[in-house]
Every structure is written in C-alpha cells, then in structure tokens.
Image 1 (tube, rainbow, N blue to C red):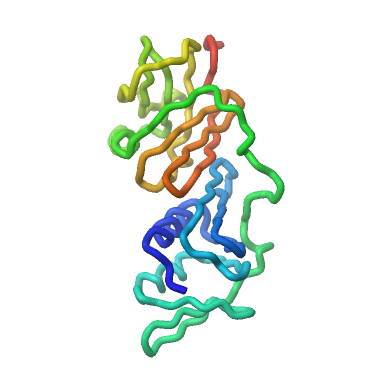
Image 2: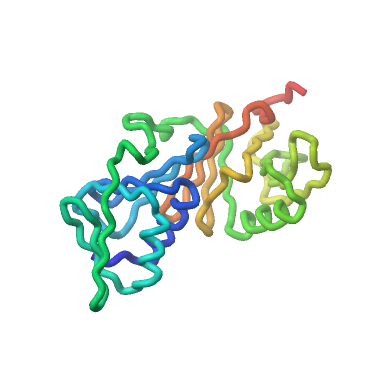
Length: 226
C-alpha cells in the first residue's frame, strides 16, 4: 500500500493535534487533543487491513518524507516500509498507550444554533492577523446584521483586535462565540461551520471534520449576561 499525498497531509495535521494515532481497520481516522478540546475525524482514500497504533507519528512522517515512494506492509507486530533496497520496521504501540477519542461517545448529535461558511482566505486572515497582534482567541459574532470573525483577547490582557465581515446574518438572535486559537488546528480549505450554545463547534471540510470546544464563559447565544 502507498499513502496518497492527501492522507499524508491529514496525518501531518493529526500529528499537530496528538503525537500518537490509533489506526483502525478501515478508512476512517480519528484523533483527540490531550486537553480534549479538539476532536477530528477524517475519511481517507486508503483502507487499512488491520488496527495498529503508532506512538510517535513524527517517525512515520519522517520516513514517508525520506522514502516518498514507500510501500507499506502490515505484519503482526510491525508497520513495514519498503523503498528500493531499504526496509524499515516501526513497532506497533499498544492502543492503551495512545490517547484516543472515547468509544461510543459522539458529538455528532449536537444541535447547532448558528451555521456559516468560512473560506480558506477567512481562516488564513484570522490566523495571520491574530499572530501579528498576539491574540489568543477567535471570536465569531453578529453585529448590525453582519457576521464577523475577530482576532481578539476576550480576557482583556491584550487591547488590540481586528475584525473581518464574512457575510450577512440571517439569525436575529445576538450571539458571540469564542474559540481558543490553540484549538483551531485545521487543514487548509473551506469549511461549513456549525456552532452550538452548548459549547461545541463543528468545522466540516472536504475530507476532515473537526469538533472544537467553545469557551462558554466568554460566549453567549441570546442577550449577553455582561
């Protein structure tokens, strides 16, 4: 089996969320951040024949970078990469040593109060301006009939902020949803976004869906308590 560029890109993204990954049999990969604030699920083009765990994804990614045409084989105890005259074995890791999303628990049934679209350009803008201003939060709100995304610090430690209008608001209910930048580890692309007043947001892309925690202490749906 050879891994496609799109699957390798997903693995790189998942490595930014969690150092290890449990590969289940099939073509769906899932990961969760150590603080449990970010859960991601991706459907890939390949189908793995068995379940196996890799404790340090950076090793696998490094080998895939070194051997760009590597063939993967799945033995009883090792992931084997073959390329030309080279054969490299990565020992599987027991799944109990890898942080994985809880089995049987799903956030897919959440009801989302706000739906919107964020383009790759929108996300790149908020990432860049947030980095320049050192803003630790992304804020999505409706103001004067418009939905806007902001790079800001809702805790007040940084006074600089910046806002970008992303469209008209069809929702008459005032809202403000706050997400920590550190939890927005998304692949580049456009996303359909749903946000729930119960503290969860969903970013649905081409092949990956992310469920990201909303900072409920700084967010509101309806009139602000402040």
